[in-house]
Length: 130
Image 1 (tube, rainbow, N blue to C red):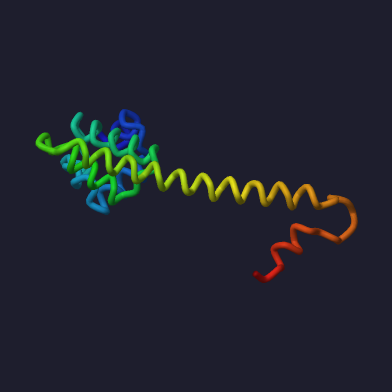
Image 2 (image 1 turned 135 degrees about the vertical axis):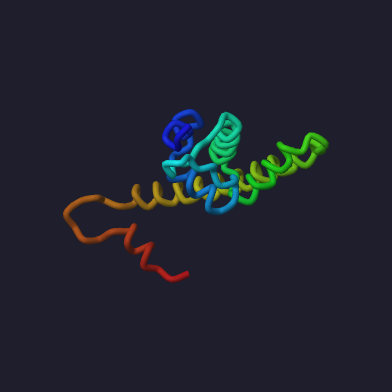
């Protein structure tokens, strides 16, 4: 199937499919005589796996590791679990950081009168050094 069909079937955009080929996450697709990329069901399955891993926040190198583990039937599930828990911990830390940023913005917005006057605690805070 052509790249558009593989994209639709896997849920991964054509642009990202090309990117994954470029960075070696997936092998370069076979080419038809016309020059179009040609994907099979295994390729689509792999692309869907990659798309789901991206949806869960895994980066390219982590996905590379996950693909290797997925394809290695002699793997220990502990390796996969460790990757998932590490990603979850990073997301938790990022969530705390985002929540702190949100609270700061809400506090600053509450302190701002939002009227026609130039005084603005939001800009004052952005201007402040340390």
